[in-house]
Image (cartoon, rainbow, N blue to C red; front, side, top):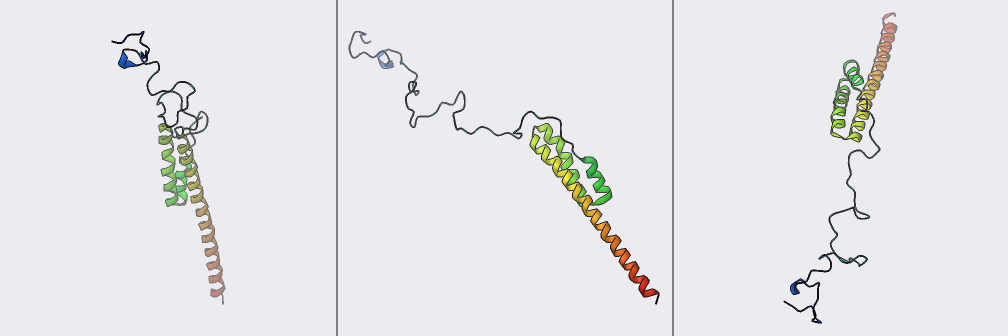
Amino acid sequence: MTNPNDPNFNPGDPQNGGQPSEPQGIPPYGAPQYGAPQPQYGAPQYGAQQPQYGYQGGAPGMEPDNNLVWAILCTVLCCLPLGIVSIVKSTSVSKLWAQGDFAGAQQAADDAKKWAMWGAIISVVLFVLYIIVVVAFGAFSFTTSSV
C-alpha cells in the first residue's frame, strides 16, 4: 500500500489503491475528441443520419380509397389486361396500410386508379375506331353494290 503523504501518490491511479478521477475513455467536458470513439447512447449526434420510415408526413388520416370498384368495372367492361393490373394494385392498398407503409398504400391506390383509367380510355378509343371502321365499310359496300 502506498502512503497518501507521499508526493508521488496519485489518488486517481487504480494501481496505487485510488479510484480514477474520471470515467475511462471519456475526456473531460470541453476537451477535444479528435479520433475518439463516440458514445453509443443518448441523443443522436448532430449531422447523424436519422432512420427513415415509410411515411414521412404528419399523422396519417383515413386509409386511401383502393378504387377496387373501378378496377373490377374496367376488367369486366373495358380492357381485361389493364383491369387485372388495377385489381392487383387495389388489393395491395389495405395490406400496405396495415403494415404501416402509408406512402406505399397511397401510391398503390393512385396506381390502381391510373391503370383503371387507362383501361377505360383505351377501350373508348378502340370502340370509336371500331365504329368508324364499320361505318366506312358500310358506306363502301353501299356505294359498290348500288351500281
